[in-house]
Structure formats: C-alpha cells, structure tokens
Image 1 (cartoon, rainbow over the protein chains, first blue to last red):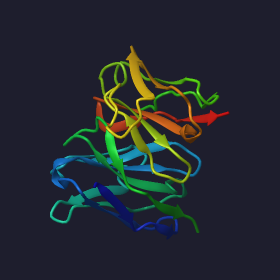
Image 2 (cartoon, helix red, strand yellow):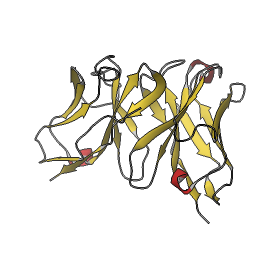
Image 3 (cartoon, helix red, strand yellow):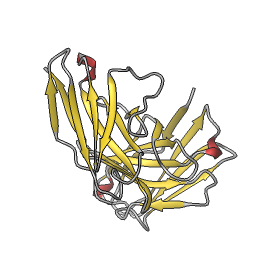
Image 4 (cartoon, rainbow over the protein chains, first blue to last red):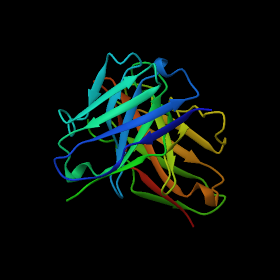
Length: 121
Length: 111
C-alpha cells in the first residue's frame, strides 16, 4: 500500500522559515518524480515544485522560485520542502504527491493527507 | 503556466449524467494525451479518477469516463450518486515545463 505522510507544517511569522517532510512507503521511491502541491483556503490546486526520481532535476512555480527548495533523500524515502522568506500568500495546505513517471508528471497517482502552513503575525 | 479553464460549478440529479469540461491550449491539453482528473471531497486529499485522458485506475468505478477533443478534455460521470458530490480538478502535462498545470476546479452538486 502506497503511503505518503507529511509533517512540519504550522504557524510561522512573515519572513520566517519552515521545513516540510514527506515520508513515503509502499513503492520504489527513487523511481518516481515527486511534487509538492498547495491549496490555499477555499482555492484550487497549485503545483509549486517537482523533483525527478534521482533528485537531479527540479523545477519551481514562479510564485515560489528563490524561496522554496525541494529535495529528497532516496535512502530514507523522504521528500522535503524548505520554505524560506514566507509570505501571507503562502498560507495553504501543502500536499506531497507521487508522479507516475520518473522525471515528468503525466499523472499524480497518490497524494498525502496534507499539512497546513499558516503565515501570520 | 496558465491554469486550465473549468466551469465553476455543475449540478445533476441522482441517476443522471453530467460532463465537466477542461479547456487548455495546444501546448498542454491539445498537445499531449496526458490529461488527468481528480476528485476532492471537503477536507480530504485529491484522488486520481482518470489518467492519460481516458484511463481509469483499477479501483475507480466505470461510471467515470474521460475524453478529449482538440484543446478541450471532458470528464463524464454517469448514474450520479450522492457520494459523487465533490470538487473535480483536471490537470495536463505541458511540455514547456515539467510542472503540472491544474484547472481551477469544478464543484459538482448532486441535487
């Protein structure tokens, strides 16, 4: 059974930092690209970052470029999202999700339960 | 990346069929057979319902079907049931970027 379990969300002040983690199990982690998708309260889905199965390829939405960094530890089957210089507009539920492919996202076949990040003073 | 265009809401009565559209461009929906559809109930994570335009994961009911014509993809739900009431999102691979682009979401109400 595929499981994705996020952690690390919480309340942070504007300009602060958080590190999200996503522990994966039930599949060959290194064989799949992984993405972070966020959903602001009452809004739709936004893919903010992707990392290839090897970790050698990454990409970011323009809205987070330079502030968020995606990484992975294939030996621990864990995905990370380092979030710096946080803004109020980063407030959202952040989902860790598994891509069907190794380096591109043709579909997202499994999602974590999400972790809430609230940026507020 | 521009979001794909979906109607904000659709509705139908139990037993009826509804269709949700998802319009993109030749750079995403129209250029690749990599359209997916996701169902999201309130407070829950999205769930994959259709991938590669018209394929269903094994656990998904055959009441859900997908298709594509030009730059517009469609999700059809037949034999509507109360539990189908949810938000539905489309997504597409867009070759110019490795990021997946999502539609704005459609709220399905079962009357």
